[in-house]
Length: 434
Image (cartoon, rainbow, N blue to C red):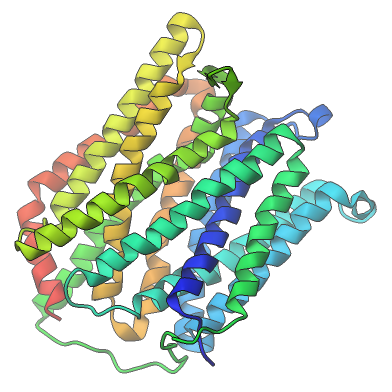
């Protein structure tokens, strides 16, 4: 069975991200909106916990998805099965909004849980395996793979940017159900795109377990896992911060931000498009920088890049603290605080997440690439879970304290990475020698 070419994989992943972030952009707002406006009427804390649990579940299931691909069904079949399950989940969410006859047998809240669960299952199969499939198209040596993943991430962020604009805008301004329709349509496009094999097919991993590649001393092998663990901490903190955009930051933009721009009130859901839009602006510059540094032999190690990315996250949440101070002083905060904060988050994303994806596909044992990538997405799961739990404390702590706690966590970790950068550089060299 042939897999599609790289361009098709980028399209499918972009559509999946459109569906994911389009749904996330309205989920907290839909849950907390009154039933009179078509919402669910949930308390803020309960809604943020569900959003965090849903996001965490997607990437926790990625461990199972990676294992199934490596051991049972193969990488390409995992991608296809995941896309079908996602379409089914979105179809149930749409049905809960438009086909009220189903309410005679299944109440809308049950349909919400079932639909979200199917999306969790499908994304858990899709995400780790499409990343592995794309990584197989690049050599392990040099920065070609990292630059490739930067371009891959441009496609991802293009979908992530459009999802909140279209699905979020329809849900917030027209009806929540039409937001679900837009997100589900993108998921369907991804599924249909994967049904058409490309002419320049990427090699497909077999479900048969290949021999473990590599060798080296126990010290070199240990360095591989030390690098992975070190990057995992940075990834958990990054996603704990970023996932606030779908929860607490979304509600903050809706209730506490002056969103009028030239007489037009910017929908709160559109604010979640800012970060991926800014990633599209930052990523090409970073790709060019890596190419220049690679030619001159001065590419910084993972420790240095993680430290810079975490400092950038810290600065973003310091800005959000400033926004709450202006809100308390004049009633609402300026849109500029969120724009500047999302720019800092976008810079952190390019430095931390694309580096992580590239490094994991480089140093993971080839026979277990799907499992390692699935396990890697546990860092997203843990980050999303922590984001929901920390964000839910807004009712007792207040938003300023929540933003300050996240700034303290990321800032402290950045200092640790800066101090450990030389040791991590040694681990990185040993890991890449395997």
